[in-house]
Amino acid sequence: MFKASITIDGRHIGPEYQPYIIAELSGNHKGSLSQALAMIDAAAASGVDAIKIQTYTANTITLQHDGPEFRINGGLWKGRTLFDLYEEAHTPWEWHKSLFEHAKKQNVTLFSSPFDLKAIELLESCECPAYKISSFEINDIGLIMAAAKTGKPIVMSTGLATLAEIEEAVEAVANAGGTQLALLHCISGYPTPIEDCNLKTVADLCQRFNFPIGLSDHTTDILASVTSVALGASIIEKHFTLDKTDGGVDAAFSLEPDEFGLLKKETQRAHSALGYAGYDIKPSEAGGRDFRRSVYVADDIRKGELFTASNVRSVRPGLGLHTRYLPQIIGQKSSQDIAFGSPMKEEYLSVPLLKRDPS
Image (tube, rainbow, N blue to C red; front, side, top):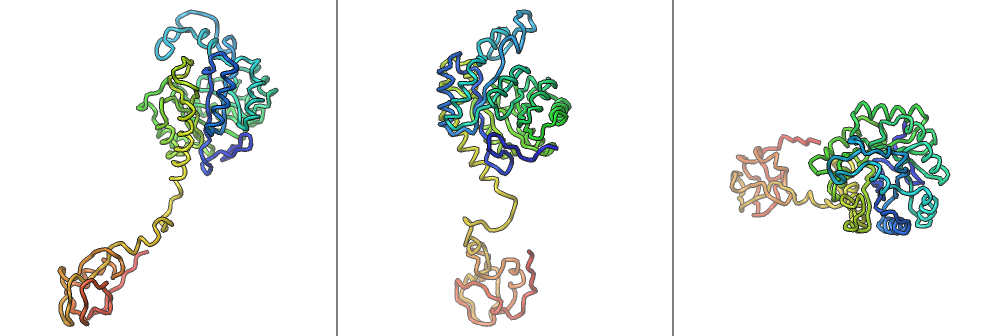
């Protein structure tokens, strides 16, 4: 049975907690360890909850083949072979120990997406606190089960997967003994047009599964991420870059440090705005009921004079009789002289009201 909330490196993640913000470094380090370390520094400074890397080599993720099925036909990487793209984008395995140690010094969580069983072995040696299954690997049942068998929390992206495939992957985690799982709604378009986001899927996944749901966001700004929080997202993953213009492989749909800071701030504000379902008076409304409408005397009235639509009216403030009684008031005789601007009281009436107080 999966837990309703998960914990990564001591941080609780679920609907009742502030959104968990993940900065995906991917290949934006451009093959430079010093840049990768600088990215960790900048991401940590921006306030993210976690930084994620990817653990693969070109040889472990694809074949060095230039056949048409191994070549990308459109989009950001049009014309490139899978092998060449992954050779450029991969995070060298010999960096991993340094990256994990550096993140620890910066007091920020680092975890990774493994793409094969040896990658899991490497990450276990680095004490990786959680595992991310990427959208393109959600159909690799053996990989999912191997990651789940570590006992670490599993975060899975759902891009390109049918509902049946998502359910199969969830079952694989359960069958391997996993108890901490989160799913990220994802559109695997790079970048993703805003009209393709289908964020209502976040709310649908929240209804279908009793564990944290989030968004892996490949749009070019923060709108989809902030909106998803209002629909139930507990986790937001966005690609991170130091500079969108530096030619990083994923830079076109990545956020810079200041944008990540804004993402953190606005998703927290969105979560705070959700509050709870209720109809009690909030602190900021205190005293406001006194300025709602009620029945007031709109002209000087003499004893015995009839109340009319002209001399008694529904106006602000709210210190007179409730407006629901106005039809009972009009046509009655006044029991006394009443000054203009007086709140209407039952004692001014010649006939008692038939009281009704809906709660």
